[in-house]
Amino acid sequence: MTTHAALDSDEARVRLPELTVVDVRTPGEYATGHLPGALNIPLDALPRAVPALRPLSGDVLVVCAAGPRSEQARVLLSSEGVDAMTLTGGTQDWARRGHGLDRPEPGGRRTWSMERQVRFTAGALALTGLGLGLLHPGWQLISAVVAGGLVFSALTDTCGMAVVLGKLPHNRPRATDLDATLARLAAR
Image (cartoon, rainbow, N blue to C red; front, top):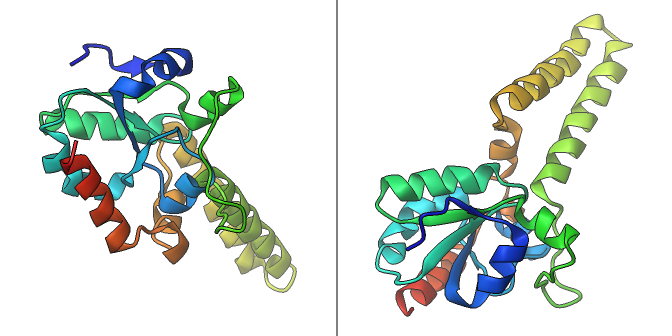
């Protein structure tokens, strides 16, 4: 196993054939484009995958959109005895550097990235609070709560809204999908 905690996109591209890539984004985000050969195991389902990840002989690379969730995954896996690395800058940096992403066939379900879902939801709630505030000033509290949540999210590098949105049906893995992914891991 490697002792490096992170690989940049260029290093990961060179080493891709020898890596087990685990994408910890939601299934909807994964469907928007993922590293070639990446297995989708959402962050909240990762504890269930630990037994399948422990016996792997190669390096494990955990990936998310930009890096924070993959770092959470790396820490979790490390605490469970699984050596793992993160992809610096996530799939966003990977794509920005011109490396290809696997995408579902045209006509398949397309879901927005979690970041885009959060921006849309926060914006829609803020506008709703402002609009309803014209009817009664108390409704402006919605906008204030959203603004406070965004500041808290930035300060802590966490996002409660993303956690809630991740539980929506289009962001949840079907049990059969996760079971198939775990079976693929066990076969390695």
